[in-house]
Image 1: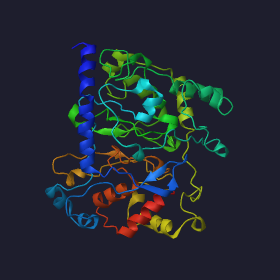
Image 2: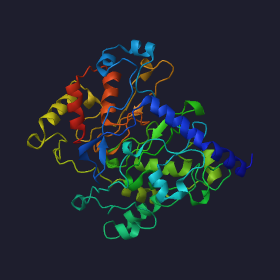
Image 3: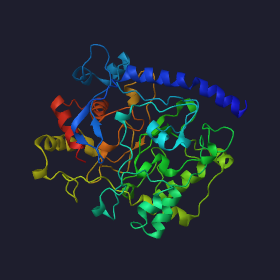
Image 4: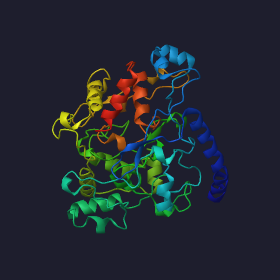
Length: 410
């Protein structure tokens, strides 16, 4: 089939794909946003609160929390099954509308973003630099691009760091965004950049398919993670476990991240960078810091008692105690640089588990919804409910509330 036929056919079915995904989301979640009146992200976006997951008829969170995994699986009532890509057959990176409005080259003709804006990070995200904390948010409220990076950062970054930022903002051919006949965008020659996905070194909830799972129908949805705090991470990639940000950066450029297929990458215009250029890109990424956490001790990462509320302090006790959170998310950076398997197949009737997934940092977590590797937990409350079931914690309602209060301060 010729490209114009593919584009015409898949464009015609795009609304059907969107409708089917929204129906699925509506069955699983209450998508009417409930916003916290006080807690905001760095640039002022309010947090959506939950839980949003719909329970089986007649069930309460307390009742399902008291069931054994076998019972939950047999009755097929686990409220957080994996979240699918809206178009699994094509897969690939999908961007939210607010980003497409600014950069139309990112729009695909076959699939649209599916989650409401209330459940994704603020746009544009703030930027904090580990070596210039006194500057606060250096984004100036703008999305950094190849058009404005020099104006925004020429007096902040060194020439090497500026060069690294330039490369992170330079569009190259990648999978659906490429000048070949299997592209999924109307303007393929414009390409895509590293910081299209990691906007301002953070994320806007873009998603694609995990690149290392085969066959296609067994690959799972994967949210774009933040680059904040990458300087302290020892493994990179949810499944691949690359051991340095330099290796990860080079791998992305060479192998068409969306597909993990070197032959496809060569066809689409593999971009082989000199290792010096890779080190420039890595140096810039290693400067990206977490948002300020004024209630945390700067060294230990624990709450400073006279700055925290009683609820937050109780939540910290749950985190490091009954909740078992700290076994994978120890202070001060709230990650252990390991991979863990939650064995969700014990709860899911007709679905395999995900296998080992790397631990993600919880610093600044309130600014990175949705949660888990595929975004199936839309809010922090959903995330707490998920782990309460997956780890059989039997937390009380009060303990869950306090745990969320603590997570908001990280």
